[in-house]
Length: 537
Image 1 (cartoon, rainbow, N blue to C red):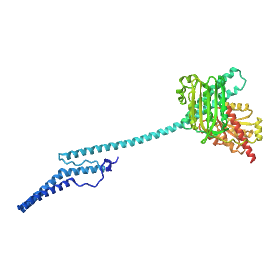
Image 2: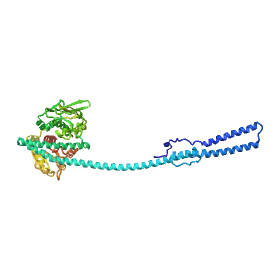
Image 3: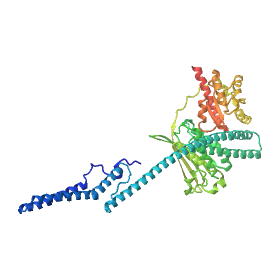
């Protein structure tokens, strides 16, 4: 803190004032001169004027005036001058004590008081300087601590992301085998007890997968690492998939599953199919979970305004209902309507919390209305953009051959269990299957077989899926061959990375049969379309 400006202490900046002592001496001189004038004038007018006497009188007056001036200078002028010099020095930032005239009066007291004030100001300035220096040191220390904390936080965030990615991969890979083999066995001849036991095992595996997905999604959302895609989405297909996913549990409870689609719903919209499916699946599965009799219904409609188009999706049920005082808290993490819910129905309370966050990421809103004992209605409203239908693909000889069931698909997978699962699903749908155990075998398999589609694992020993895809694209024979990534890498950005590296599609493990077959059909149609364009040109 500086002291160089007089205004900081409230001292006005004016020209130097005239001395009070000088004014007092001048007044005293004038007064004595007046006395001399009166005295001598009286003598003169009364004819008693004596020059010698007048001279002596004037000399006496001069001596008296000199004595008065000296006394005034000692008693009044010098103390005031000292005070003036001290005030000026303080105004200039110099806190030096002033000289005090020991006159044993108010001026001496004022001088001592002024010196005490200067001493206090000096101590205060020193303290301020010390505090300023200390504050700068603290700021530097705190800045260093914050930089270190930020560095550690970045490292922790990176470690967390790597851990989530690795955990996702390591858990999804065996889950693919478990669910896939259960589905394969369920399609074989089983007695009622065996089929029931396998369905129970499948429900347990799906519950584990759901918990894994919820934890990973919540972590990605909180870390700000989840981004939404904008690709063509078939809303009707998503609803069908959601209904199919919960149909077994609904049938076990005797529930009716209903779907109502209002006229005018676009065939396709631009959006993130995985996240839209997740929103709807969470709401539908939640409705089935808390409904013991009656029905669960999904309603879709669109509203057109000047600002654009909005989609409203409602999920109605005739379940237990939610108390009015719990309607808002059910969207909080790890929260359910009451403590007995988790004991009776299970679950972590993450589904609705994630659903609300996903809806908000789409720029939408979610609400709920409910009545205890009569059911609930969850309503999601979000803006959507319709997209035009693509042109119908031209039928080619390869497409006709695929329709006859003679299409061959190359499965590149280092895990034998996953090979068996994907092979069983494809063969059940009439496709031929060739397998490669790692990316290094891909070119040989393509040269030995007429392949229409490659299902490519990513993380493999030796040549991984990305490198194998680059090898495929390097050959002019297979530059248009569709390649679909089937991987346990399900973190945000993985799909975009695979598409940028030359792949045409993406499926995350564990494999969902309807999604797998839908992607296979889509990519084979894409292959037909590319071949037709090549033929035309």
